[in-house]
Image (cartoon, rainbow, N blue to C red; front, top):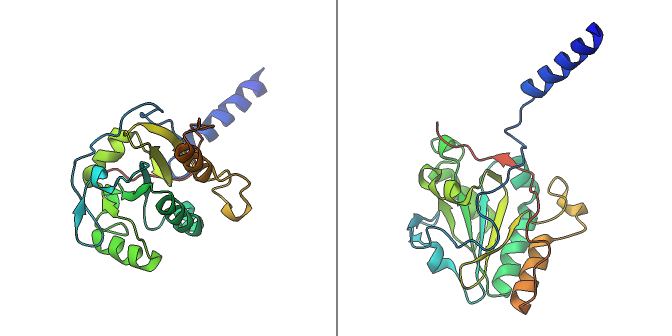
Length: 206
């Protein structure tokens, strides 16, 4: 009996001490059917201009991606992100990339670092500063990368991962976001509407 309690205590200690921030999974506050929040709030773009989510929307809707400059999962999915930008653009879906890492705004996710990263990646969509992580809070977004697809009426129709293998995207068998956009444009039911996405935590300022 004593050994059993010791074993349980050791297991509990491991669970408590194991970091869960960096690669944690979260359920977002927004669920399919909810409306796009803060559609008319102006945000600073890495190109020096400002825009809103409403202005970034196109004929078939809007794709919002929470990302950053240095997360290992973001870096692993850089090619996937570029392909997603091209795919969304080709299907008349607007796209924005949001950096909500307020706690690192004076460091690797500073505005200057964002400008440099956007240029290196050749972003053709807005890369926006989420001041004080306000938009991430409204979305319930907690990690990077994490995506939210809205139709042309501003209704959330898909959220989660870009593909089924964010740790090794070159081995992915399902590209969820492309399937979702194809269904959206065709007026078909999106299935699945939600998936779990693995990524780094959004660094909110305490």
